[in-house]
Amino acid sequence: MTFLVLDGLQKIYGTHQVVQRFDLSVERGEFISFLGSSGCGKTTTLRMVAGFETPTVGTIRVDGRDVTQLAPNQRKVGMVFQSYALFPNMTVAQNVAFGLKVAGKSPAEIKTRVGEMLELIKLPKLADRYPYQMSGGQQQRVALARAIATKPQILLLDEPLSALDAKIRVSLRDDIRTLQRELGITTIYVTHDQEEALSMSDRIVVMSEGRMEQVGTPFEIYNRPATRFVASFVGHLNLLKATVVAPSEGRITVNGQAIRTAAALNGVPVGAPLTLALRPEAIRIGASETGNRLDGTISDVAFLGAIVRIRVQVGDNRLSLDTFNNPGSPPPARGEAVHLGFSPEDLHSVSDA
Amino acid sequence: MKRARLGPWIAVILGAIYFLVPLIATFEFSLRVRRNQYSFDAYANVLGDPHFQASFLYSTLIAFATIVVGVMLVVPTAYWVQLRLPKLRPVIEFITLLPLVVPAIVIVFGYLRIYNSSSWLPLTGSPASTNVLLVFGYVTLALPYLYRSVDTGLRTIDVRTLTEAAESLGARWPRILFTIIFPNVRVAIIGGAFLTFAIVIGEFTFAALLDRPAFGPYLQLVGANRAYEPAALSIIAFAITWACMGLIQIFGRDRRTGVAARP
Image (cartoon, rainbow over all chains, first blue to last red; front, side, top):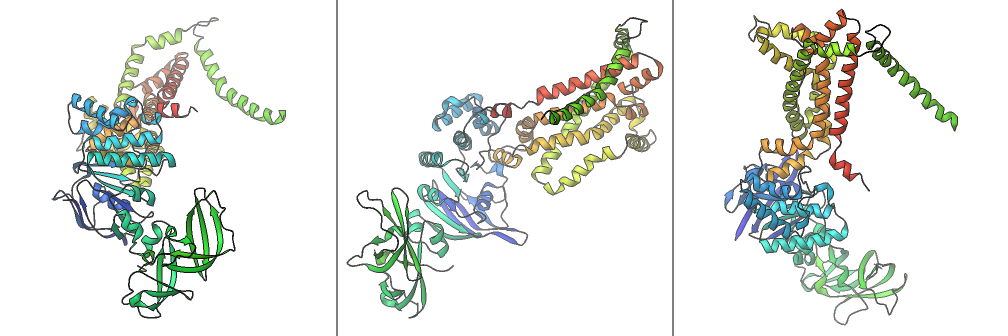
């Protein structure tokens, strides 16, 4: 059932269009990520949902009700900020209780709920601490507890993990997702970190320059990027310059070497240039029997521990591929000639949009 | 090496002599009421004088009223400017600096012209309304110090995000101001309040021209008519100022940074 509808949202500051026509329907309990680099309009869109910005055009409906003109304090949204935004003059318990107090709950009710929330974020012993006495990770947990204590209709998270170090980021990421699933709360998560978006979301909205580039599940976004931007922004990607030979059979050439795509290239004329995307993990060293084969020379080898990243020059195309480290055999050397094998199914034509 | 250290010490010693010698001399003079014998008679005279007590109490009350009105005016203004009208900051800063540029005598003559008993708003018509006018005048005088202090305090917290966090939790303006903004700029408000207190306690021009029984005119009266008591009063005034500064230090110590500074 559709719970949150963003209908034709646009935001224009002066002559600068920050958000261009944003349409999205979010199911109840769904976890949606807005993914994009800074300045792509993701935070502005989130702030429109929160009520801190008013859309220039378009409407926002929550559970069938138009909330576009409602003030933030009437929208029943919980918000978590990158900078935690805990009230410095209040203890953890007072911070979590703030929204409940505003809502006019009884002291007994507030006490119970605060206790529950602190149990939920696994910090029951820190109720009397002040924000300055806690680590960033703990502060962000408290901010999360404060946001969900009032049982908001929608939870909005604005890059909540950006200010934390890598290890805490991963553990808190898992905690947020678990909590969100348990509570079944509709959530919008803004991030520039593709790993966060891919690992947490039910669906991802990839944004660039105020436009929605693609909406889809992490699997779809990663494996079938709709535009060149999505392909290059999400994960590592090899872009191959090819020439079409026989469109209906998907036959093409890359630097004179014949390969083919799984899908027919209908509508592309013979001899036309074409850009193809190929994920590094889809490429194997050593030609396969049935699939595509390209011959090249190793130009660079980066040993990253568990993974070895190898760059191979195929004419004027440079391909990157990842192999797992094998303790039994050292990685190949630069200058070595190699055959690369990959399946036709892994080749995707990408539009330049 | 030694030479390099000598220079700053000479500066410190010269500075100390410049400040301390007149003070010590004044203190010594204030003790000489009796011939050939030091005593605190001048202090006893001053502190026992009912006019001293009345005028000091009056000025203290006016100072408190000034602080309350000033804080209620300045904190919401500085908050709003920071939150919604950052472009207006230079304008507001200019306005708050005006009392340093326009002499008090000019301001008070302006007041007397506008609010005299035959004007459309005769604030000088009765003692009570003159007191109100005096408080408003003092708020103006304290503006440069109070506004700067509060504005600096507001800059140390993330006003915008804290406001948005409170708004998303359902809070409205009065609650945000009184439960989040005021407590977090407490130190800045206290600093500004003590400065305001120090200004109001010694202020002469407004009080004299509006004919109010304040401490400033009393100081002037005693200074003009007595020998040793003005010296004692000067020392008392210094003690009050120092006490204010000491209190700023005590209350101004921020719990947050105090702990955060520890390794």
